[in-house]
Image 1 (cartoon, rainbow, N blue to C red):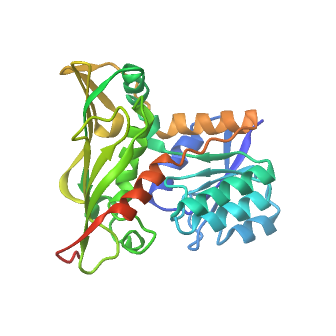
Image 2: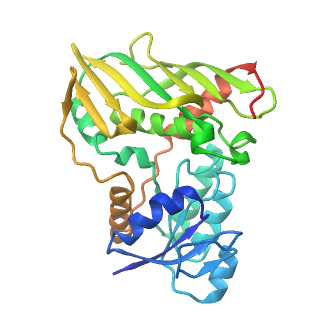
Length: 307
């Protein structure tokens, strides 16, 4: 069976990542796109809303929701009501309660729901997870920094309530961390630096805790870094593991480990196809929980305005 899929929310991530992954996977056929601008790939029917897509009578089996986290629940409910399977870009929603409502709606509809934490599908992540399985963790640092001007030019929604701020990219690192660690992790304390003219943080420091989590484990997140730095460093039983380039490369005791590299989204879509075929769902809310805890526990510090 070929899965006729529509992309909802056609922006940079949809164009750069979702479209090539869909076109490169014979399990899918890109049937439509939905955006207020009626934007989409050449030759693909474009609609201004999910309602318009439904009214068209076009055959759709699934949707990939690439709209903003605040918009995602309503889109998910519409898609599930239409009987479509749903893949959600990260994060699945702006709040845990909304995410859980989507899960309940998918269960009631009997449709596949997949929270696609794309960085978990980076080439070196499975190898890192296998290396750490059952091991004692001695030290932990996540260092996730980039330049917001480079990766989110002109995107004002990220600075508004529900936009996540620096945790929009930072949740990628937390999704990898929660995937590879052999123990659960919690946020014990946080410092959130928020520009005077913005609603969401531009930088943050998280302190981690939990059984098996060593003292001093922490994470640094910053949107003011001109050079991308997407690293996770973990000491385990006398060894040093460095997962770098967002999970694309793996160093163990200073030696690079060979890993296959096909990007993140092709294997993500393979997993979605498997879930649809098997009639299953996969929704891990731990990364969103960590961000919610950071906002709940965080010390707010006002920093210079950002333009």
